[in-house]
Length: 73
Image 1 (spheres, rainbow, N blue to C red):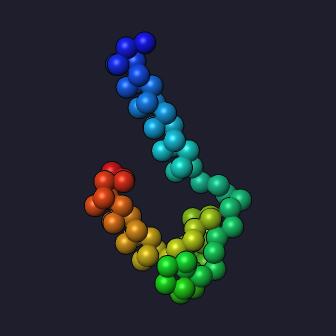
Image 2 (image 1 turned 30 degrees about the vertical axis):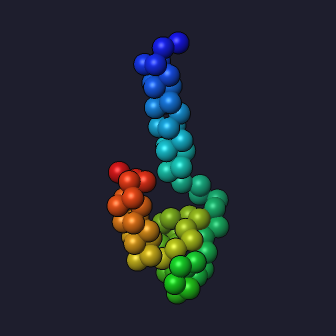
Image 3 (image 1 turned 90 degrees about the vertical axis):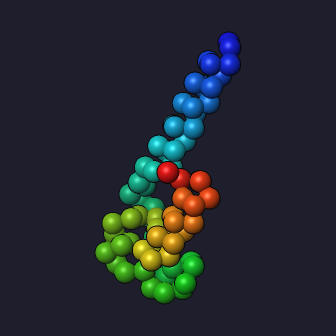
């Protein structure tokens, strides 16, 4: 196995991990209050994003910070 094969294997593992992280678990329990700001999470968001732990506003801030840090594309 050469360096190209190793890089391809790592890329595939990272891609599969990212895909797994984005799959929605329809049975996940959503929080009733945001873990960041402690405001109630509206029922429509809780239904649309099973397992959510943050309100839409706080989630947007988290995603923006992660994008700036290069953690997400």
